[in-house]
Figure 1: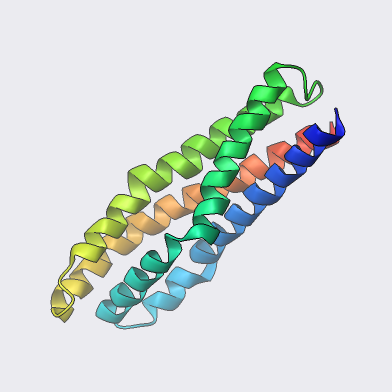
Figure 2: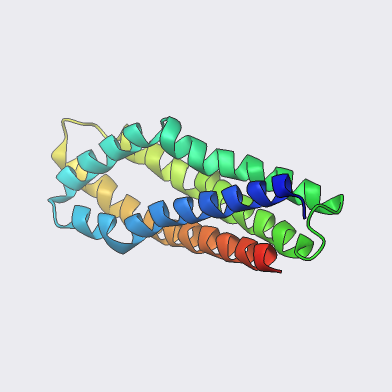
Length: 160
């Protein structure tokens, strides 16, 4: 494996690990912390988190990593990673489906529904939070585990 291919693979390991850490934080303690608030306040806090999440740091981590995985998976078909090609391809598939796909198909629509609840109606915000939280968190667990699995597969490829 060339030095450039190794560097790209190491950056992909860091990217998938970073994304996994963000999702782990939400699964591990952020959502439980928000649950300690009144439901309307939890909804307001999550809405603010969602506004600030859609900025360069997180978007670059999630989607830049996805792009990099596509690049290294493509490179693996051309022999750049002879010992770990299938680990890399598997990592890319798991990440693209379990992180990018789940984010767009499950978490973002729930974020949008939460954002649509009327700000001035605490009852509606509370109801929106109670409807939002269980499924959003379950899908976030999928994102966390998918990004962690993707990272682990890349490490296997790197060591192989």
